[in-house]
Image 1 (cartoon, helix red, strand yellow):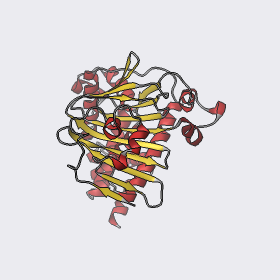
Image 2 (cartoon, rainbow, N blue to C red):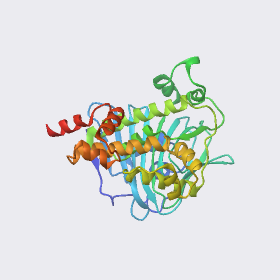
Image 3 (tube, one colour):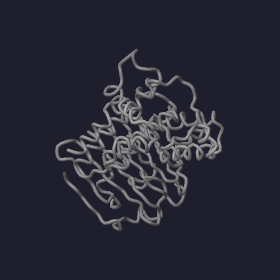
Image 4 (cartoon, rainbow, N blue to C red):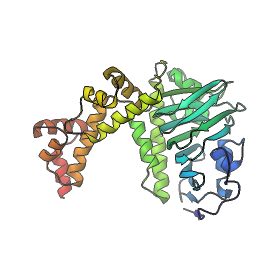
Length: 358
């Protein structure tokens, strides 16, 4: 692995007061994603550059200066074919950038923030956990806008349509309809679809944003999670029925996020849908439907997953007994907890305790 490190203050005048996002910052206004990646090694505001010693993996990080905001952009190129952009930042002021058509297919995994893409006279709002799949023909430019002071956490995975088709998709008539448009390099307009982010993709994206690894291990970790995310995206597109996704206003989104936060911390007893709806100020039907649409799983499934993981953590990391762990997540009888735990994890709680004691 080779590494180039620069001090955070070692930046050219091109950053200070700059407008746009990473394309404009790295390569100049009007340049493509590939141009931005090609500029990473010579851009003075890139803080570090990493290469894997044996695999064709390359990454670089750009941190925002204090006068611009807080956070970073992380760029990774995988085998010269897959471009990965990990965003985890907050800009103090709104940012607008011209996005030139480059003929690539983009899988956008949104965790949080508020972005918009202007397509002709249509605005595509990207402000909730969702998967946005995007194919922008060469020569067709659009603009991209980021709201000020919004915590942006998302991952963009881009590749050539031919590479997508050859590597990840079935051939010919076996290819699901929604995937055919993205696997083709032809087209005279932007092709896109937005779909709720599945629970599995949400977790994989979150793990990638919060990667605990650095150096060669971090590069391989990014490669593995990127491939997992592409698989989740392809599976999502394969299951699309063509029905448009539901839209939710800012208040409804805040209520849904509040409901999710309650489920993540209240385990015993687990809140009923009625209690949850009253707590966040929504009707039960709107809450139930909205939670599944925005977060990709039912309230019951999400609550059960949170409770079981809490029980696992109590036994594994805090040496709690099986009975104590079960009581902590609302089970009055150890046998009921054991049955539910085994159904969820595929192992018995006692197996966790035995592994802990070794």
